[in-house]
Amino acid sequence: MAMDVLRGAQVKRTGESLPLAEGGIAVVVVDGLALSRSGLCSLFAGAGGIVVAGEAGNRREALQVVESASPHVVILDIDTDADGLLAMIPELTAASPATRVLVITGSRDRELHRRAVRLGAIGLLGKDSPPGVLVKAIERIYAGEVWLDRSLTASVLGELSRGVDSRERDPEVQHIALLTQREREVIAAIGAGLKNKQIAERLFISEVTVRHHLTSIYGKLELTSRLELIIFAYRHGLARIPR
Image (cartoon, rainbow, N blue to C red; front, side, top):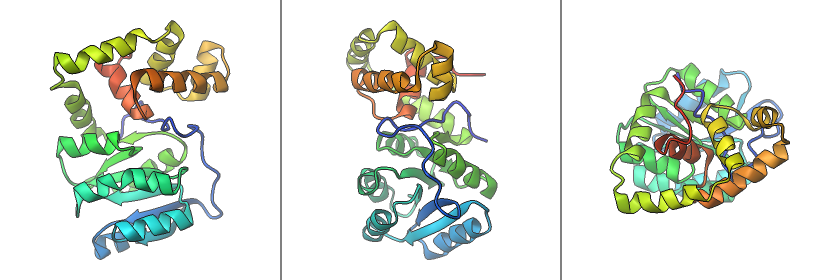
């Protein structure tokens, strides 16, 4: 199971659901192992609402198919070449700006998890997760949310909250001082797991205004995604981790 609060869209996207492809959510599977790739494609073939728009076994193939298919979600298995495949995330989103990336891995390396988030992954899922959880993660990511597998949550949050010395913290404190009270309220609401529409209703503002606040917040804090913002907020006490 994943933490509901760790869901949301990247800042460079609207945070809203993408148009549904005819037949379902379009996905591209990127996996260096042919058998593993075939298994994922077979899983999706039996899952109603998900359509495999393409598959790839390496960087060149992945960029080509993503650019031509513009899928809703890319399933990126990084275990065959973690460094190379993680570095490809910005290229994938550049090739198809509306596409969202879900990283799957069997590794418990905290640095890999952190890099995936930093490079723009909208979801992070352990390979020991049941197939149904993978399908659910895809559906949530398609809906404009972030998915972070509960088993990896402590890894990412813990790694990002430790090992930061005072020289690194000082600039962040200065960035936080730039936030307005309304922006702090938006951050707290995001930390509580609210979507843009819910935040708008709670604060009696429009969704457009919420998005404007988020753009300002990302700029002031020098962050690039909703997941980074949530982690930053927890680390600095701008939001509480739901129990």
